[in-house]
Each structure stands twice: as C-alpha cells, then as structure tokens.
Image 1 (cartoon, each protein chain N blue to C red):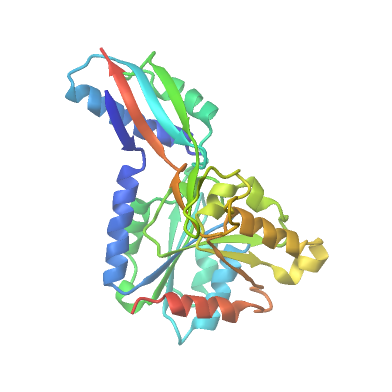
Image 2 (tube, rainbow over the protein chains, first blue to last red):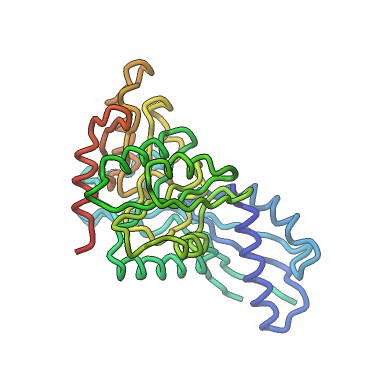
Length: 113
Length: 213
C-alpha cells in the first residue's frame, strides 16, 4: 500500500498551489480516484489525517471522488463501464479495448483561504 | 480552484524519459511483476542461462531488503544492480534511472527489471518499460486475476509459471486462463516452467519479435 506516498505527493502539489495563490490555509482538498487505480479511499483518508498535520492543510476536509471505469471497444466502438472482473465488450464480446478512464489518481481541486 | 494534476505526473515524466533513453540505446526493457514467490528470480535465472550468446541481458532487482536475489543472478554471470527499497512497496522511474547509471547498457540488449513482489502498488508506476510482464504461478490459485484486476489489466504479457507443479497443486488451467482473458484480454498469455524449460521457446520468440530494430 502506498497511500501515504500518494497523499504526500498530493499534499506537496496542494501546498505549492496554495502558496502560488498566497493563501494561508487549505480548507478543502478534492482528489479524483479511478476505480481501477488500486487505491483504497479509506486508507487515503487515514493517511491524510496523519500527513497533513503541521502543514497548510491541517484540519482541511479531504473529499474523494471516485471516477468510474470507461472502456471503448476497438471492434464495435461501443463505450462501456466494465465489471471489475470482466473487461470483454458486452455488445460484441471482443477483447480489444481502450481504457479511457478509471486509472487516474489526481488532485482535482482545492479551496484555500 | 481547479488543479486536475495527476499524482504520478512526476513519475510518468521520468518514465517517458527512460523510455526515450532505452529506445535510443536499442534496449528492450521488461518490468516483471508478481506476488512474492511466483518465480520471478527463477525465471530470470533460466533466461540468463538460455539466452547466453543470443541476447546480452542485465537485471535490476528490487526488494525491501537483502541482496539475495542479486547474488543468485550474479552466479549466472549477469550484470545485476540490486535496489533495496527499504519499506517502499514498489520501484519508481527515478530509482530505475539511478540504478541504470551503474549498468553497462551499451553492452546489453535486454534489461529486465524485477519489481518488488506485490500485486497492488507496482501497477501504478510506469518505469519506462516496453513490456510489462505479470506472473501468475500455478500454485497460487486460479482466481488471482479476479482479486487483483489492475495489475493484470496493465500487463502486456501474462506468464503462467510453475506449470510443472500444476497437477500437484490441483491447478484448474481452463479456469485460470479464462480468468486472465476476462480481466486482461489485451495480454499475450504463455504457460511456462522455468524448471523444465517447457514453454520457454514461445516466450523467447515473443521477446525477439519485440526487439527494437
């Protein structure tokens, strides 16, 4: 599990952005986590509480938006949200797809004051 | 305010640097991933022996601690750099960049990066490899791909290892292959035994076909 490392990176990015805005505090931080990223939201929240102490983000709310998985079948161009254990195209059964969304781990937005 | 930046932006940038560098050196690079004990090091030992005289191979190996794997591989005469990651559960592009500075890359055709044994975290870290190889051993159960979809989903090749043990382990081959196909339809799947050598020729042909021109 590298949720602590992910939060450290996200915090560093957030603090950098906040400093650019000459903000004194980060009040809210939103992360976008793809359902196929392998990241556990609860572990992120726990890590955030610990890692944010003594930073501009201490006491901030961490919001986690889960991003769905989205695939496009290269055979029939059908867009579908696959079940985690079945990535075959539900329309034509082909196995050749492009993963368009679902692996992202992003710092989505910030509120500062 | 909107930020919309990937947490892995820095790693992804460095991985792309690595990829460009490897391409310029005409080096084929593999990132080998599996749970601990699926036969990564044994596979590399076998490859080192079989490919001697055909492909000049070097290895970067990551583990939390010890250089046991590096010592095993060095006895085969391969150039090996061990990265002890401490408590870190995966290799990242920067670690590979540092390690490869110590390798005789100009005298190599194939660089194999043996990642930390872990089916979760290494999936997120691009190292700049051309081929991502995920191992599933016949002794660890047919449903591993269903339990850990992201890592299998990211594979270019899935090697089903320890096929010589399959019968003793009660390995349900059809179910395992079907599970891999469902979760990772994009991957080329090969069944091998590093012990007996079964299936290794198909794997070596695949490697040859992927070599940079």
